Amino acid sequence: MSGKKAKLIIDDQTYEFDILNGSVGPSVIDIRSLYAKTGMFTYDPGFTSTAACDSSITYIDGDKGELLYRGYSIDELAKDSHYLEVCFLLLYGSLPSKAELDAFENRITMHTMVHEQMHYLYRGFRRDAHPMAVVCGVVGAMAAFYHDSTDISDPDQREIASVRMIAKMPTIAANAYKYSIGQPFVYPRNDLSFAGNFLHMCFSVPSEEYIVDPIIERAMDRIFTLHADHEQNASTSTVRLSGSSDANPFACIAAGVACLWGPAHGGANEAALNMLREIGTPDRIGEFVARAKDKNDPFRLMGFGHRVYKSYDPRAQVMQEAAKEVLELMGVENNPTLQVAQALEKIALEDEYFVSRKLYPNVDFYSGIILDAIGFPTSMFTAIFALSRTVGWISQWKEMIGDPQKKIGRPRQLYNGAPRRAYVPVDKR
Image (tube, rainbow, N blue to C red; front, side):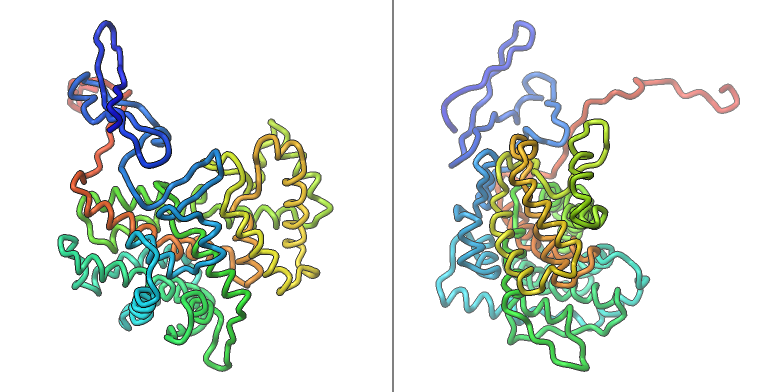
């Protein structure tokens, strides 16, 4: 608490509210007593000016283009760390020692297999089902298979549920992909890295050996790291709201997966790649840029700008480097979509229209390019996003469960429907 007060004047009555300060970022006005004092609620559609919780996990400064995990900048972590170390950081609040990291990686590795009976769940879906529909269903069903980690009042059960979710999500997502293309499920391997194991489960087949390319593996690890958490976004808020009712952790993560599925959230990289394919060839870029500048044309360039970041998305800078490495490896000479991406990126970074409006390429623009070059269909993009974000969801859920101020979420409303009306019997209407 800062000691300062915010004053609200309604008619001739003045009300005071405490101002709370975080370690960094904007201060907040504590309005928990607003309704009791005034009989009024605040009105904030989309909660764009509302802090629904206090958290020590992730911090975003949109004006500076800064993203911190537990105080560490995302660009340093993406370049010098790796996903499982970042998972430890998000879960436990500090970077691990070598012994702690080894023990944590071993725990994750030992939990990558899913219950064998869960394979029957996949076969209940149509082959053309969207992978996110499958992932959402399978994650929700985990509560039916892992009864020993659903008691949220038990810290040990919360811990094992967290490890299981992080460890099994790559297997769940890879199985969804294999099922969609009619290939057999590939079991996880304990001798591979987290990212390497996921690639192996997606692209290997029993009839021949699959070697994970280190450049692709590193790019995949960076995608996981850059998407691991992003403060109180829609899906994270969904996980927290679900968890506020004391729902089991698997149900909460399934709710997050469902929210992430929305094209305005997790589907942004898929939309960006679809846009590149719509443009088709580099010679048509001028036409589409002109349409984007036309206020009367509904066309939008996807993968540019960000609701929070008002300067360059810090994740995009790291992803841009990874994209260049992957494209050099895979080659773009015979891929018109990737040629369009490169040409459009150059225009967006130089054209005054985009620069003045800070419409820089964001992380979704580059991640879609990388995943396409690796060989993933666009339908898998959001499932990979969910895989990456699972650790963030779990970390936020654990923090909320341990918060002594935790309350069940109950937003209020500004009602504009009919006032009380008398019921009229049907024969008199």
